Length: 63
Image (cartoon, rainbow, N blue to C red; front, side, top):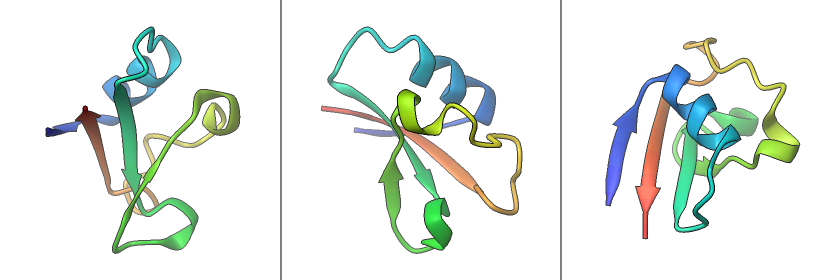
């Protein structure tokens, strides 16, 4: 299941994600504008979530 989410909720869920069956996914990560990439808080906590030109879309994926 894929659910579009705002940058605010993407950052919030990524930081406090107690479940490992929920993934925050970003389009535009590493200049990949065709595919979505999974975000990991440890690696991506400094990401500018509110830069809509660089990171145009976030989704929540539930397995």
